[in-house]
Length: 513
Ligand code: FRU
Image 1 (spheres, helix red, strand yellow):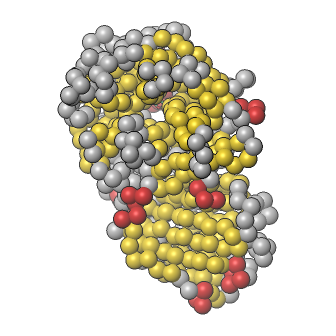
Image 2 (cartoon, rainbow, N blue to C red; image 1 turned 90 degrees about the vertical axis):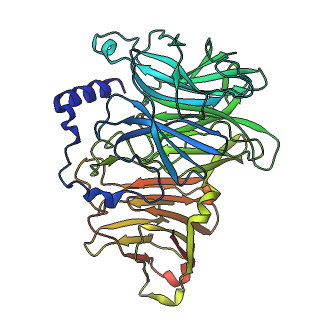
Image 3 (cartoon, rainbow, N blue to C red; image 1 turned 45 degrees about the vertical axis):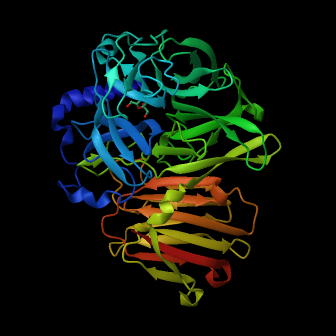
């Protein structure tokens, strides 16, 4: 974020800690109405990227970029929470604080089962966090080597942390943007691999002990000028085969499908040294086409008998994250998702995502809505709280002339529109009139994602949680996550399309516990 950081630091300097002043629309407490019920939020103050996600002894750990003194970005700490199912979280004290080397930027955590680092023992393997140090004084002095990599370890299930005395473990070779280490164990070469985001590309390092790292190789796109952040690297078996492909995830600071920041990925092979893209022209895909899923990364050390690849992202966008109309807390995480890899064409693979199965037990009161209730191409669904529900809608696109739209609205005329446009063959989420949006010009917009299914029958799964919508379609090949801030409580869901009774095949609503 180079220039952003300088601007942000300057803004924080000017505002002092008054940065926590309520935004225009809010009084203290008022914004609690936007706090999601089953998405993770910090109890108070600023949060961005998920960090150090690791599973150990029955607990999913979520660390996160956290500034405990204001509701805007500032000196970064690692906040900490744990969960047994990735939905209900318990807040724990801050895990990592800034020190003489700098702020604690994004990174990952692993369980060092073989105690390669020597920080623990085989009987009590250390949890090791690998993160970026960002030195603000050095940055201010005009130096460019202000980001380095550091490590810390915990011998008590992530409750307390010891920083490694000889930090940093990787010093800066001369790049202003040199950060966000994701570390994995590469079993074939029996070594640790770190993938780092370095300006407009990724770099790979290897290590036997998590302390000494050797540069291996780099991967980037020729001529790309965007800033790359928060990488991830993992193998996945291609569904229905024994083939293994490697997924290189990279968050992009600009140029996401609907503007601003977003999480992308490449598919290829990785031999412990080098990532080689398998797709023609280094094709880049997006994990989510909505505007609000950034820095999405995966959990480490999910037990082999579980075998899932589980991911979660920051449900915001750097374009406006620091201006959204909440005061006490700023930003939530997406729901945790399981990703799987499918072969969709010759030499073409794509990730499918779905909400983790643990979420199923939070659903109740399944209601199938009868088509007999359709009046004048509208199906009205009165739902006491449509902002905390899951909606499943199936329809045929064949007789469809204009848009197929699900409207979720309040008596104050806040209206969120979710749907499918047969003319451009795209799904959409339209938040232009969904509530407060004047805090940033980029916010009020209609977002699109191409429909990838060739079937006549299409299905949308929509999960609402107070101020967010997560849309899944095309059997998980399409995902869109958007946030919004309604002025009044929404209480009506309405489905609309010309000739609706011929088109609609299934409508099911669940309330959430
Ligand atoms: C991504 C990011 C990371 C960095 C962190 C700082 O959102 O810019 O690259 O480590 O946020 O908070």
